[in-house]
Image 1 (cartoon, one colour):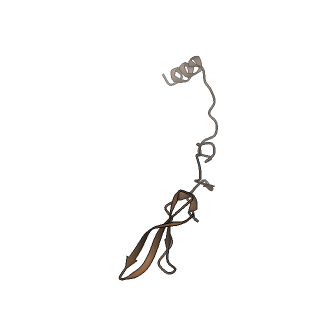
Image 2 (image 1 turned 180 degrees about the vertical axis):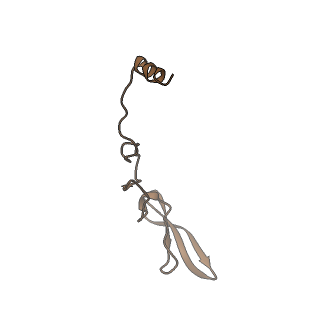
Image 3 (image 1 turned 45 degrees about the horizontal axis):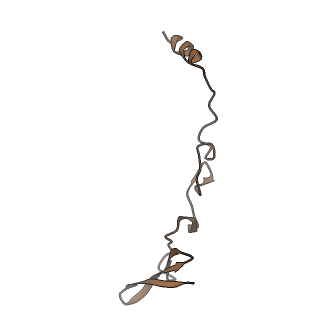
Length: 85
């Protein structure tokens, strides 16, 4: 069920409305005034990282930010550090 919550006017002309649909507030601009949404998931041009759309929860592996790290023991770390001395 849609319920109109707000009408936005500029110079006595309706430019946008805010309606409640399925417990979400939807911002709709009239034709020629631009487009917008108050719900990120409704964006038509979502940003991307490494060509992965930023939608939902993503971790660094999902975003291809870093390969998996090798696991090192304390002894191996100590040996690496000592090699610089």
